[in-house]
Length: 107
Length: 120
Image (cartoon, rainbow over all chains, first blue to last red; front, side, top):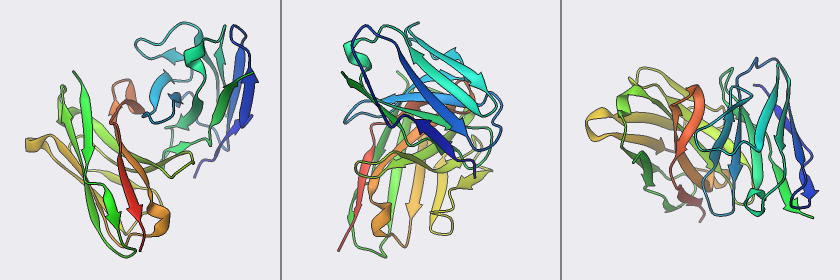
């Protein structure tokens, strides 16, 4: 099973600033990496797929990068609605696996 | 509108069984794989199981293999998760999620979830 490790566990950032979230895979997943956002009491929402492609309706301030085992989600100029938990997920191999999540909180 | 709606959650005793349903609407149900993903209270997301669009291929996490089965009824546009020999650690919100809108494995549409509590 591929283990996905996200860092940091919690990230405190002020509105308007940039946030950088990391995700590391225990083995090569090529570009088969997605990012999801989850707010309290809600289902996850797809943000990024293919490591760097934004899903429909996702604002341009969200960007993804990386390949292989190292990935990054960057949120430029944080808005109030961006404070949430973010998960990465690999879909290169079975079983699908998620990272443990990064909580993005208001500083 | 593309939508998934889970049902069937509830309180069940350890060792008991429960069947979850996920009703799909607004898209060609048989064209997409669907996954079940769960989230224990205060914890992260855990992929549980998936089934191909045709239903011919199924996949399970090791934590549920041999206890859970997944199936789909194309005529009813409904996905099922049969959960047997339930344990306390199966307590979670269970989401169904469509795969394939952006390629296999990418979960682009999610239901609102149904809660399963395993307790005596």
